[in-house]
Length: 511
Image (cartoon, rainbow, N blue to C red):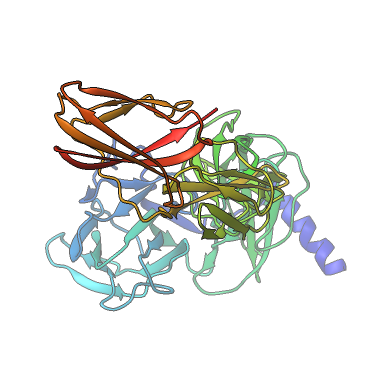
């Protein structure tokens, strides 16, 4: 306890101005601020792309994207001329297309060269297994080096690079350095120590976060900011001989998005198509991307402000929307049990026909009510297993609509064929016609032209029995009135035989 209190006193004295040895001198550096609109002065950069999203830059946005968007390509960075540096450091992250910790063979490669004259280059490092999370790497360089060149040979994936520094370190004295994660209101910001020493051991770390909170003694602390703004964060380090060094960086604390969305409809029958609309806001900055979580394990819809999603299975679903700002701050909104999808019934039936009557057997599942359309213009039936007698032979489309207790419906239609029980085949057509049909028993037979000679008219019932027989001799008249007013209502077949041939026609008597 006394040792820790003693250290805390030393740290506090250092923060208020007691000895702070100058452990390093940054000779050349760039963070690509303003790039690609404004290139770093004196630097050669063959790539013009940048990364600005969370996790793709070092201390501050943007980073340089080393890629020219083609496979087996080479991009290059060359520093301005310098002298006196002994260390190259940079932040890198591989945005890989596959693999773990780097791409599958043949691998993309990052090479580092040094030159005493910007003409003759010596390879000092080559790496083909590059980190897929942001990492600061360091390379020692020779005393006579005047230029450094970094190349990236792309097989797949792009390399993000940021915070390039050429530094001179004082031997035996610590050099303070650190990085931080994206700072967002209400989220813990992680601070990572990158301090080094050329001989000796760093033993103590102390932090102030610029918001009047108490200093923290820890190597890699986390800190929670409650207000958006710009804060000066300072790291003080000391070694085992109590030599100290400090560094300060500006940290921008950003507001978080306020995710909000609407959905319509929120209930219905499967399959149910729901339109989700993102109406999220943010107090400052720009909303960049969103991710939808539909409550059924599907999170495939990305970056869609409006998305139409279909639920194919019944259930109650909690929907969430995650939103990321351009600064990298993330927030998520959940609407519990938002969408209710009801199961639809499955409509089906079978049938059997005897004569003119068809019996229907209901095979629907999940239904509470039924509607039968027999396809002949008669009234619908609502019973479970109805039977229906047709007035005439023919082919009829019969539809069963099943409705569930949640008002979900499903329909199935099948063809029902009623055969002619008489075996009599009609050959309607030609000039002969009968009207009105149906009638109450009087039918006008129009031969279409004058008929000479004998005309036979036979009337058959629907069962094929001959019920009437007329014999008439025509001289020139083209029409004949057939009187069946004494016959029962129903379907009959009229067979007319004349010098013009034989024609059979179906007629119907109604009362």
